[in-house]
Image (cartoon, rainbow, N blue to C red):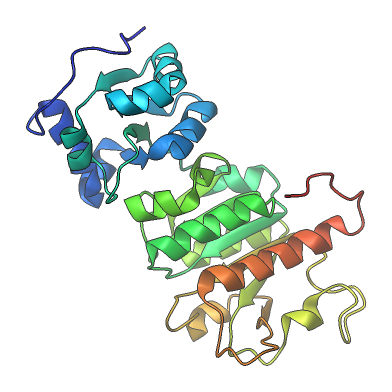
Length: 289
């Protein structure tokens, strides 16, 4: 077991600190197959998943508030390193660091592993470039009870620090597939029995029509297991990707807003599928208050 509170590192030139700072770059993350998780929430979720955290950096102030994180990391065999506030500021990607940061091993799985698990609700991110939006979609998919999220090879790196922060720890909760070609992901989901539904604001068909009991759709296409396709924040889904879908729907705008951003639209779609899936089953006791 690692010693939780060794000598405090006070230099950002320390080899340990320099190695961790390099993980801010995608190429070096990929080489090390490691990424950074900041803050007690994300670090706690990483530790709860087990076997993910390889190193933990913590300041004296954070240690006083979150000693259980250091203890848990040490029990799991992670190297726990005390650092000064200056070193933490050099490691962190946020303006006001919370004093605890973990080096985590990659958590993504092969596409075949996701399909083998018989998923019922999956989000496929095609050409989603904004890390905040991508991370929020992953967090929303987790909240909606999805069985996995697929980041296409044209989308942002899910281990981008802003993306990881936007997931609020959900990156450690549900299966994640990274760098999958969109067509390959769609074909795999269809072969696994999922219906492919694309969300596109230009569609002539409203999500209302796709809901169970919607206009002209007594059963509704959201009843079967569903994989949602979400596109780029600025230009949506290109024609060749839309052609891969079994259905294309638009989130209806009832007010005067010009549109919804990607994360908000994805939340509406994922929860619509979650509701359709649960409607014929016993209602969940899990209600956020």
